[in-house]
Length: 131
Image (cartoon, rainbow, N blue to C red; front, side, top):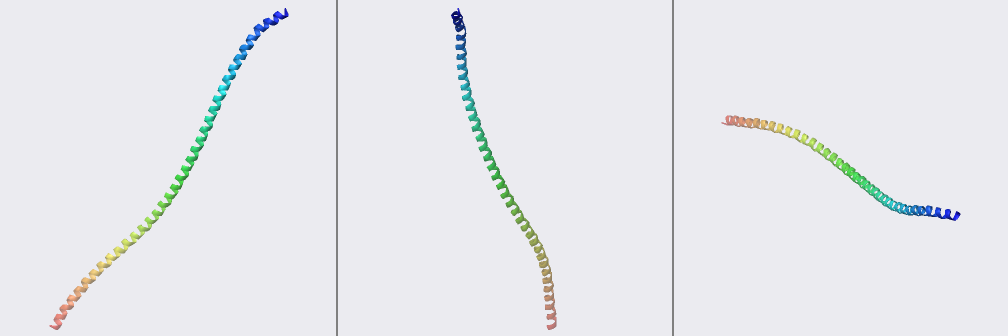
């Protein structure tokens, strides 16, 4: 009777064990597939992170170049503004001098007219004296 009970238990339990083993193998296969997929995904994430880092480095380099160009342009603009201020001051000075020269020329013309009148009068006086 023990033997019959043992056989009955074997017949009941062994097929269940086989089914559990089969499901366990299937689960292990799925776990392995998931593990491979997770590993691939992790590699993609790492690669993406590397690309982001490279992009950030490029952005930083570009920003440094932009700052350098901005500083250079600012210096050049400042220098140009200084030259403009200098030339503007010289232009004002030259304009003032030109105004002074115009005034002197007008004064000289007036003096020339006076001198011409004096010479003309002297000529008339000389004519009278020697006539």
